[in-house]
Length: 133
Image 1 (tube, rainbow, N blue to C red):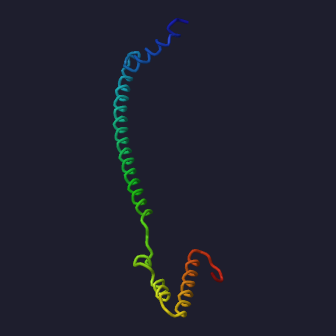
Image 2: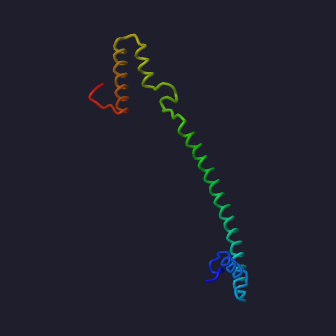
């Protein structure tokens, strides 16, 4: 066994020479090296294009996400007033106040009964259902 067969540098040099056209007189690997260089150029160009498109998609997605969060924040922080509260106290409560302001005891009893009915309606809306207050 000679010293060249165990020398790693020798084998890498043979491979290098072979790729650059000195492979036992043939020039076929020289064309392969040229083709690989062109292929690598196209791979790099396509990689840059794909990266630019991916960056555009990420930026667009982030913009839409922040817009959605902004609209969601506005929606969740806006208080929705009931129609009764929009114009002040409800007409039913105004009627109860009129009856309380009256001078006869029958008006006062009617005010208590009407307030009791309103309380029962409120408790029913809140989920407390029963036979009476």
